[in-house]
Image (tube, rainbow, N blue to C red; front, side):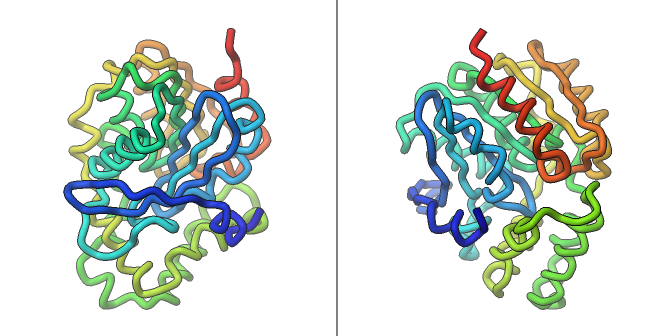
Length: 280
């Protein structure tokens, strides 16, 4: 499935975040107990295109674009922080009339879902965090620089595209990105609106939103599924989460960087399916 096909298959729900009515685009497939996947920055729900498919054979997969990302609302004038994204997730879960969910988050999305699991322990069955922001592990210099006030004025859409292409290509473990990956990750930012939205997303990164929570409060069975060679969110943070969360296991995948599901798609799917589909 390419990005255009993924986008065409998405549905939309309007949610309220801080008094703003915002459209959330999401992919929804399968039936059974729901699993919600959440991407980070500067990606979108297409990141999970292959990972979510095995899950839909036995469970329902719901894969939203965060607000300010992908095909969700991008217009200027609303908060896109982890705190605001948590509100969005809570609103979406209620709009879809979900009771108990399993959560799978990567990067910024992992930080959002970690907050949600802390604040809603009875609503979360299982939690998977992959190369997630946590504690004071972020923002990284790349995102801090992207969020500087003059970036919008001094960066063209073409320059942003080149920067994103270079970043993804240089930080993947594999020699070449898999087919469709770069197109799917960069297409939402190929406009002035997309450029401004990505900069606003970067500006909204706030370390307080992970340092203020206590991972010890997570009661869900947790899998920390981590790319061992991550230069952005090191595995030391996964080890710290393992020690702090009461029921957590850490699985590190070698030859995988921050983009663990792209570097090791088969191994990632296998570990994720084993964890989420194991009913024993």
